Length: 251
Image (tube, rainbow, N blue to C red; front, top):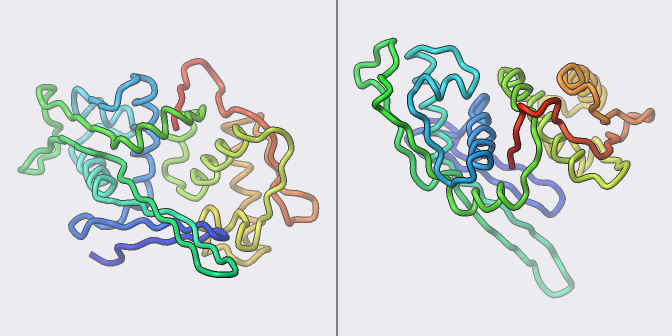
């Protein structure tokens, strides 16, 4: 199955994602699953998210209708369902090393139907899909909802690095009280926060960041983020990534 552990460190903060031996680690477009389900749960004010059919699921996730696409989506659900997130902090004082750890899963329960014969057509509407979010995940998205343009999320679904930056900016701009400067490099830098190891060289990362920001501004024209003139910081300010009333909220 390959690698079953992903780890990121940001200063004293540690984040680990473990995958299920049968399904593997979530990757790529799998990140759409928690984003969309968080949004639907907040919209519906319910910990239980229901889809009347596979076609409705595909439409919600902005995917073409068909058995092959549906099986891809089901596989993504399985990887997210089997994943566990561990996070915490590590600190040293004059007397001891202090370690704090917590963990949670995205789903508590999932009932997802698929065709055992793996034919190309979707199952009929009588097969309802039901996902129950975990108590911790649901509490977090209800207590800290973040306005997000879901149509932009769908457009960026095939570009995970740009989507990661978009979601990071959505959060940082929403919680910003005024102008903030986030370092691009170092233990607390943006490169570490969004996990862009392949662009770790400063010049390369700044060039890619500029390209990603151009793409994001095409979907979010009022995005207040910019690279500082000295190339060492990302400057952000308060803003919401919502363009119309038809776009909803996620956590």
